[in-house]
Length: 266
Ligand code: GLP
Image (cartoon, rainbow, N blue to C red; front, top):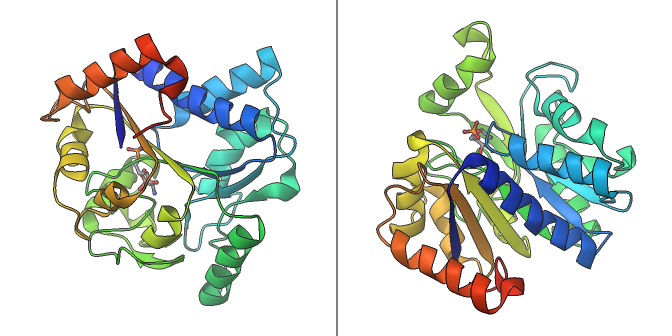
């Protein structure tokens, strides 16, 4: 794993955008796995800026989002589809036909989940998967206890996640209790993974996920098994990492010697 500790959220967002941009330049028809939450908003703003100002091209890109609340229609302001439209898709030249966000407003959840997995396969697999991390260590909505081999399916959210998400809804009762989410196994099949985390609230779980044991109780810890993961945290989210000095040293050494290797070698 490559751990990058950025001084600020702005630098974290720019470095994350660098990695996505490099992927798009290498392969214009990349399959991007995308995430919601407040953490990647700055990264999406960077990508939009680079599209507007430097013509970063998304016309051949295919996207798959990690998750979606059950029973929220795509036009609901708190749905993840709405979030993606407003934070990214409406501002870049991605072909609407190539966008995939799990459809939460369905009675046929199992069939939908199988279809979603099949679509990812048909697209040739995900080239780079962007992830945030929940306060309980979840990636996508793989709550503690999710099998490390799990696939796209329906998950019941934990009380902590419901409380964390309550800030986006008028009343706590309105927060969805279920979500459709890619599984940990689905995520681990991405060719490359980029996890971003910011703020002091994430410090303890980031340290547990990166430096603690691999356990289904912290689904982000499964990333330790993946062969190409980059984690970018800001100073606050990286504050409890025991080997922080080493990670910073590696980053500086790579920048000095072989800048093209940053985000490339674990
Ligand atoms: C939700 C999403 C996750 C995201 C997490 C963290 O639970 N399903 O994909 O990583 O929120 O959100 P935030 O970035 O707002 O802390």
